[in-house]
Amino acid sequence: MKRLHVHVAVDDLAASIKFYSTMFAAEPTVTKGDYAKWMLDDPRVNFAISARGAPAGLNHLGVQVESAEELAEMNQRLQKLEGDVIEEMGTACCYAKSDKYWATDPTGIAWETYHTLDSIPVFGGQSAGECCVPEPVAKVSSCIPVKAKPAAGGCC
Image 1 (spheres, rainbow, N blue to C red):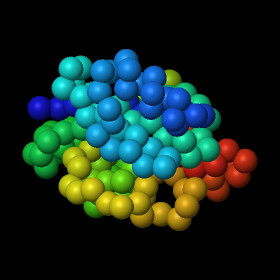
Image 2 (image 1 turned 90 degrees about the vertical axis):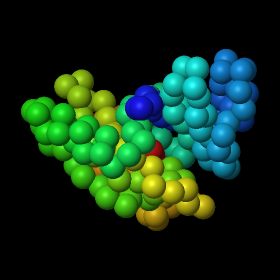
Image 3 (image 1 turned 120 degrees about the vertical axis):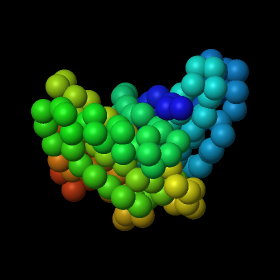
């Protein structure tokens, strides 16, 4: 079964955790100094927020799948779209190791389709401030990597 993934960049992590915990009637399932995630069943969504210097607002959307087979099916769908699909296997991002495919919708919103393999103790395997959203996708989404826009900070 698939789960919708929504990631929002926030200015005030503590205030946002309080807001979303109240709205969802649930505490986050993962809380870090710069990140929080709710794995909700009602509604079935993986909702994440982060305070890592990206502009506040929608960071990216996604579809989380539960198996390699579902991920392969999603990749087949994405391959039918006009535009590039970026493959990342065994990548580290958002305190997780995942296999994923990225695409950008016609309005420039980054979409991540992924299968989580394991949790990891750091936000990503990259240097501090780098973006988890691949650069070709990030260039047209609201997620701007540090290297492309130094004053903006990291994202994902």
